[in-house]
Length: 376
Image (cartoon, rainbow, N blue to C red; front, side, top):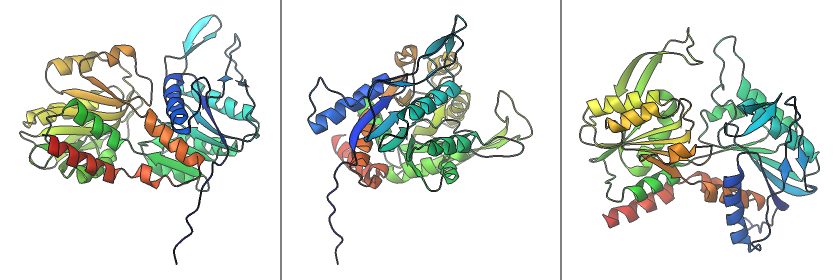
């Protein structure tokens, strides 16, 4: 007996709330939603919200429109350091903690009146502090529990550092979306002559943590993968990170092959560049660095010098977190736009239908590969 073909209607009237620093991507998401739903250009799904600060740095959230009965989606970038506020007369950049507090303030301002609250946090707050070794805090798990205790039904993130952190909220929604299709599509568009087959390309994970991601890319593209295994000294912390004791490459010969290095984030860039240098020493061809979140915490001087030395050919990051204009203007930088993808996720969830097809991009990647192979 066939299952009923359920006709889903919107769960509730749709509303977007853009936290500070997310105005650009929220505007693009709003554009796509209006296009798909035939909403007049002078109207918007964005519900105005503000978090004004007192002179002491204290803050509050103010909604400029009622949210009663609305299906609310809050877009938040906790790592936009370009957003500032005044405290005791000094200009202070907002830290991840400041952004997270403002997010909670907005949720509190909704006052339980909205029909449903979904938080879209592309780079998961404290996502790197997801496990405990010894005498450490579990910040990410604590943050997730705080959000759901305030009434958030679902948390959406992208390429989570470790999505097992969702075990902290087993009875609530946690959707981890992947950016693989958008990355491959952008790489192909910017390199139309690139050959993606086992003879000409490999995908590399810079560490053990990204192995599953690299395995997926390799399987979807039909190419081989390699892995750099890093042995770390967990008894020490330098600048908040455990130092690497030794590195070993696990994989087949990379000589003459173009390389896609896959990772979830680039902070200082030091690790990625070490991997690129090792690959070049082994005879690799072009090197494309694809990382979901470009944080560039130490600026770009090291990256600029590495590019001049020919260690890599291009860096691709998404627009899911803040990227300074100076980086966008670099000759090696390419932005991967995820605004349409986010709009599709919101549109699907608002209609209370499954997002499985959006999460699994294997078929779309394979269709893209077939189209690309026919064009070269």
